[in-house]
Image (cartoon, rainbow, N blue to C red; front, side, top):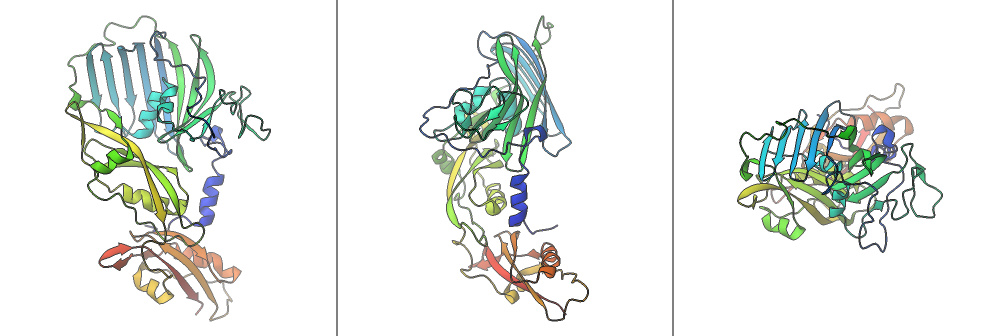
Length: 425
């Protein structure tokens, strides 16, 4: 397994690739916080499940970018107390029937994935995302003038350098853990409903929900809401949102991240992650909300995924938990203060691959490559050092195949930086 992480230029390409909703990618306009806004401007989107709304039958498909799998969603809704939902996918399936006070719920697993749960909720209640919005978070809506009926999304109400989408009005809410684009608005029973929703996981990943059918429910069959046996709370998947202080009180270990030593650029600052925790107290997902140093992101999320929390009970039944965790990072706080030498790094390498030098390269020619290795032994960054141009590509290719162990300080694994020198024999 290749244990060298993304280099700086790969990261730049990943960001550049996030350019179009048409390709299930987030827009090229960089979202900016809205200053001086104390409440999120409402979306145009009408809530399908609001009290008094017309009964409906909805079908939708949810796909992950660059993945062949899909989730099929089918919702039949009469009123807030009488509805049925089915979700079918390889990873998670559910049948949920609400018939007055009786509830039947059957799930294929004990965890409801965060992107799927957020999209299934938002497609019938778009403003659910606003419940997680905080003053200063990014929001593009028609109400604040940053989204226009033409499909233009703008950095300011008076801006001319806008990005236009072919589906008309496009709105965006960047609430922690609930970052969603709403577009392709169409009318249904006096409301405007977004037929395409894109949930942003991180700069390189997203999930897209497309409503394929939305029709009046008509006369449902008698067995639509038939419940053979009500499901007790212990058998239902419920989720609650907790503050950082509450999550810290439930943690079974300090919520500290051993930040890897990035090679250059910004080395300290603030960052945050949105975590989703299953009913046993295991972290199942950690999504970046604000990441100042993307090169350290994989390492941070890997560490967060190992954290354990006390299970949370609601009415005597365990529930899923989600919440925002804020951190101050310092990529020089752990490990050796100075970069390791070539010989020191080679002693920590468990797999060494020598470059294929171009024919005719003079013997004794050297090429240096800088690396950063995290506390798990994963290479998170490589960068060319002093090196002839013709040797850079083969040396970088070789180092990407190396494997490492972390430095041990007082028996604890720690990250490090180092410089490796290749010498043509």
